[in-house]
Every structure is written in C-alpha cells, then in structure tokens.
Amino acid sequence: MAYITEIYEWEGDDTQPFGTFNWKTKLYNLEDRMRFGFGRIYFDEGDFDAYLAALDAYNLLINQNLGYLSGGYVIYVNAPHQGWPVGGLPLAGSVIRDTGAMPTYTGMKELLLKIYADGTLISTTQIFTQLPFRLDAQLRANRWEFELEGNVENVKRIEFAPSVVELMQSQQGG
Image 1 (cartoon, rainbow, N blue to C red):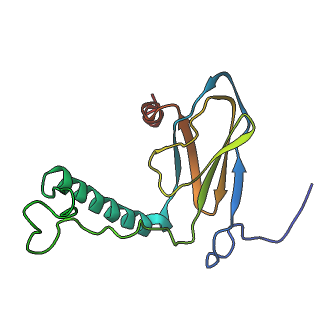
Image 2 (cartoon, helix red, strand yellow):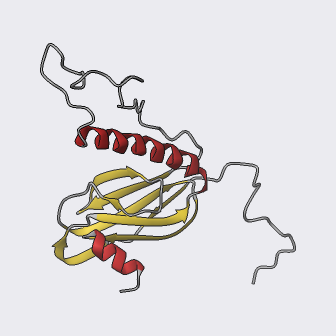
Image 3 (tube, rainbow, N blue to C red):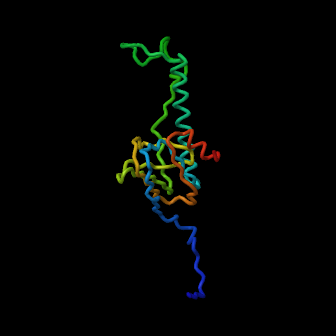
C-alpha cells in the first residue's frame, strides 16, 4: 500500500497554455465494409469563437454576392464590356462586395482529427466547431481507427456515421 502525505495540483498552472494530447481509439473491425461520411466532436470551443464569427461574416458576404448574381442585379456580357453589369454600374459602384481572403485561425487552440482505414492514414482534418462535418474519407473499409491531437479542453464525445441523418439520430438517442 502506498502512502503519500503531499498534495499535488492535477490541473496545473492555468496561466500556462493547455498541454497537447494525443488519443487514438481502439481498432474497430467491422463485419462489412463501411464508409463513414460524417462526424461530430463535442468539446469546449472557447478560443474558436472569434474565428467562427469571422468565418460567418465571410460566408455571409459570399451568400449576398450569390444572391445578387442569381437575382439579376448583375449580368455580365462578353467582351469588350465583360465584367460590367448590363446598364452600367450602380451609382455607388458595383453591388458585388469584396470578401477578401478566407479567414484563418490564429488562436492558441488546436484539434486535429486523423482517420485510418485498413491501417492507412486516409484523412487529416482540422476541427473548429462542434457542428457536424463531412469527412473527406470517402472509401469503404473493414478496419477503422480515429485519432485526436490537440490542446482543446474537455473533449466529451466523438461520433461518426455513414450519413448526416444517422449522425443526427444518434444525437437524439434514436
């Protein structure tokens, strides 16, 4: 029997960055070959909030531009007037908004998902949100492993399914 009279702080110094972890699931041997098309990881997003807001603003501009183009506000003609709306530019200039470059995450948190099928690494994806995401691992296999690397806090659960419908059913307990 061990006996220790000292108390240690397990969580460490909260002024320092959270340490990096690496966790890999067991090897799942399936009877039939299966494709996992969608996934979801539940974790404390925290540091990703500013990036997700910038990404939402970027996507909003893209959707507005698509609305202008599909709504007939801007119609392009062939040379020599290519790039000009029919009828000339609106008074304030073009209605098309410059989206700028796609936002990049510059924070301190990271969560990386690696997927192995039949013993081969087939996908590496950076995760920023708890929303369901499409996996780029589009093949069928019998043996699957999933690995998480990062420094996010509180990874609570990971889910994978062949379709987003099945993924959402698992969330509802169905």
